[in-house]
Image 1: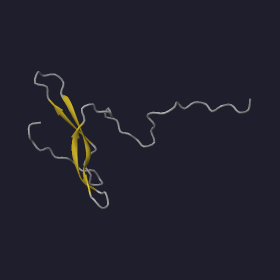
Image 2 (image 1 turned 90 degrees about the vertical axis):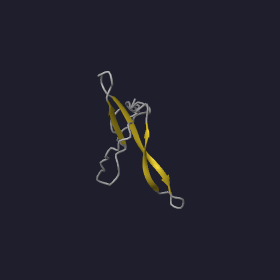
Image 3 (image 1 turned 180 degrees about the vertical axis):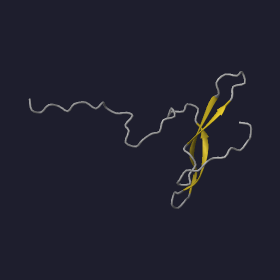
Length: 88
């Protein structure tokens, strides 16, 4: 990055976004490279363990692929199949 400060929009809860994507133009005129940064806690308080702030950490392999992770979605585990037939 070239040292510029970019504004970060806050959500309805007052927190910054969990991921921040920065498109970097290609000098040869090709498609831009997208750098992905993830929000991580800056530190925790000693007594209660509360988060004291946020910072962004570079994520080189962007595991989410740009899709939101829903808590009720299962990405791994055994396949869901038909239950065993107990009536013969």
